[in-house]
Image (cartoon, rainbow, N blue to C red; front, side, top):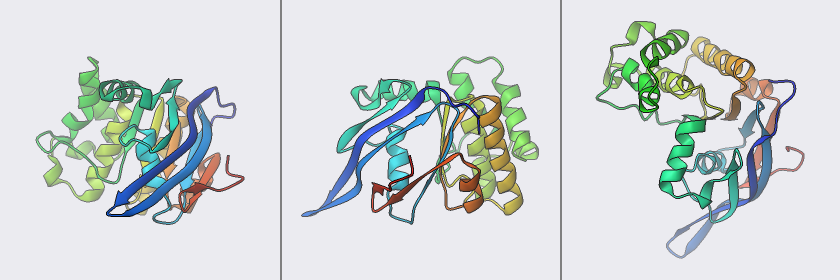
Length: 230
């Protein structure tokens, strides 16, 4: 982790999320508040159903809260409209979620090139090829998602998340579908980016070794952030 993190890049204040099923209201997150400074590596941990993935989706602006606010780099996420949130995501965020969300009609190389091409970056092909090599997919550049195993698709998704040099990387169980050796390589790559590029990492994980490598751990239980974790 960077030894001297910068100004807050994430501010979460009194964030809550409720969903209603029939006549029953279910609280998934309750009054969650914390800050993350630029360059930090933060693990989000807790048992299944504790609200970890919901929190990550809210931080990405892919879901809306019942109450509270999220600021990314000083921008109030939910004061923006859908297009504004999408523009902020494209400019600042990288994502690795449990569903790979690769485009089936594009090859591995084309999937990783896409964020840079959308941003008008002329070096998209070289940058995508380099990252696919780094995640062990250099021999599968021209394969389509349906030709790849689950673990291979996850490596492509990770390369795509990194390729835009995001200021903030959000990852939900980034090594969950990978074998131990590949998982270790991906973890090393994430922390290289954290050091080299000051990429801020926020990682949902059950992997004890991964959470121990982070500078800070946020622990959720029943949708509530536990004391002593901020």
